[in-house]
Image (tube, rainbow, N blue to C red; front, side, top):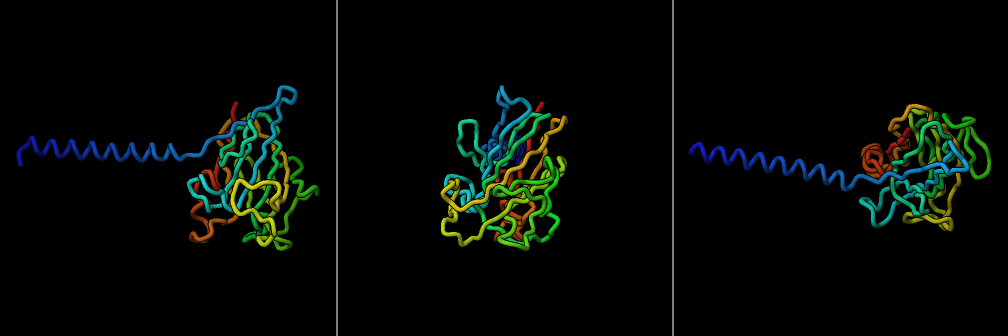
Length: 227
Ligand SMILES: [Cu+2]
């Protein structure tokens, strides 16, 4: 093979490699979940309301319809399937979670303790509680844990045999659900704070920790605290 042929093989291979890398990067960017931005109303500075739901199946139209995952209500009142939430610094975030998924006992009971919220408690179906004992009732379905914010909130689950159990997201209030509310303070260090569910809810994956548990937009995400 002459020198020119060898050079052209190297150049073509390099071009293919670069092409594949770019294809991979843009494919990743195309599928990365959107961020829902929460802004305070002029009459209530330093306060935002965040409404979330967590569903047994996110439903059709999403990359993984049969995975459990989270939705957030955007400013237009539309449910967006994502775990990326932007909130201002120095702000009280009032979170309402509609829980539509089944629950169960915890692998570690410590995950039933509420920390990092105002009062270190949550209001579950109208009752203030600081510990969810997952050995009772239908147990915990999912958690919202952001270690760097000190935030750990277990979310109470349902019985999977409820008559109106939601089959496919986004679920509606006519489906069986629990309502859990809590408030946390974002602090004064703008940062993308990682959060995730600590319940291994990736059914069908090794130890329940793959699939949705390892995927941003399903059971892992960020509280994007901005200045
Ligand atoms: Cu989960």
